[in-house]
Length: 156
Image (cartoon, rainbow, N blue to C red; front, side):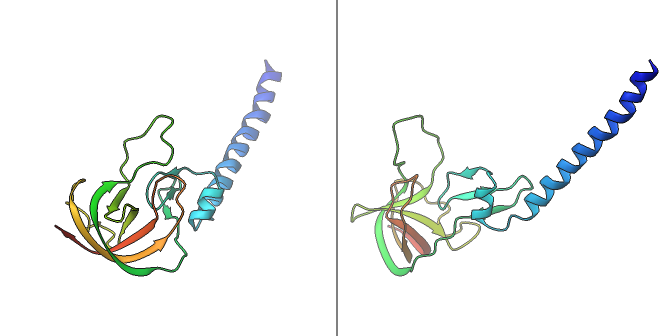
């Protein structure tokens, strides 16, 4: 019995120290994340949003930065959920806001307002005219020509 107590006296503190060390290192790893790329490289989940977003376990979120030259455009078309590129497997019900332009192209929409006030209240299927800055971008998840940052949206 005494040998078991001595063994426990050695093993339990070692386990507590190991768990504490792991938690400390994990917190340091999370705290060091400061961008979408570092979040993605750390292996945290990427949300199927447009643009893509990565969330850390402590609740911080990072958007995938779009680094191409943007140009001012105006597009008229239908307010839609962007179609997925790969429709061969099961589909989720998320809706990445988009515009199917009269030119036949799909545009991902990114609101300039963090509360989405430019696009809120617009239902899918509505005819709209959107003005903003367009950035061409190849998207791996959705069928789109790029991102249209909404500066104004008028329902027609």
